[in-house]
Image (tube, rainbow, N blue to C red; front, side, top):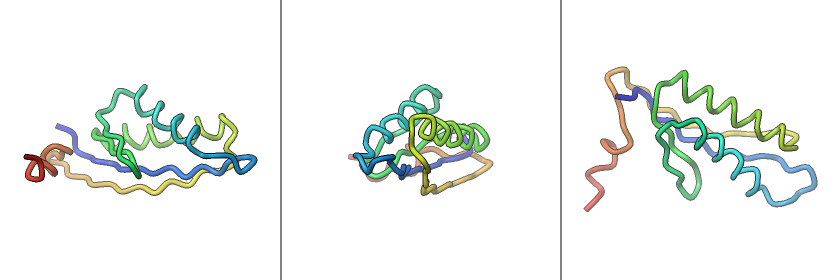
Length: 97
């Protein structure tokens, strides 16, 4: 079982004040390619896995955005870490019908 949930919202600066959605899409593509379990939400994306693995994905997201032309990136991150295990399903199952 995974030991970490990490929710991230990337806020990329755009070179010419254009829409940031194309950059956000690139960040989500990095998550998808990583193979980690994830859920895209309206205001952030939550990933489930091992802490080191998820932090590596965050780094790759920032690198992809700067390589795509974003002069800088701010990320808001929330981390829930439990060495005994944690999952998105376990935390939300009581809210599902």
